[in-house]
Image (cartoon, rainbow, N blue to C red; front, side, top):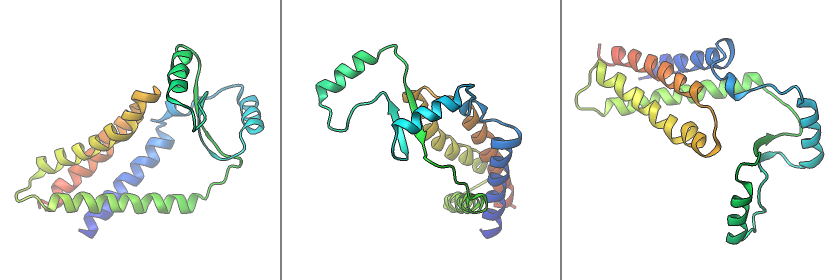
Length: 176
């Protein structure tokens, strides 16, 4: 179980590195604005706390009637979702370690699921792995894209490649 989870974790880890860096699969999520300095300046002037913001938005105590009016008034107008932080701090070694630990645990959970099958084979393992990846994709990135009109092509590529490669490896490893 440990070797299978280790290899699966490495498959996920290295795919994520390639996907987010060298291959730039997620380019649509990080578009450039030539006005970025002005935007950051305005955000820094008007937002006081780190957090996620829907702009425009309503105060937390808005009534149902205010929500309805807001939705009607917003139709066809500009809006933004903003992840705002007062300062940029990255601890790359810790982030990489945390990412790999999550990838390893993902491998352990996948193997645990697969080992509960009474009968298993390569194709069942591969398809189960792809199904688990698809469930994760549909439940988070894709569902958010429905509501917030985001681009999730990078995530579906990640599912197909990372979960497909992991499933193929586990299909071979667990059924030797």
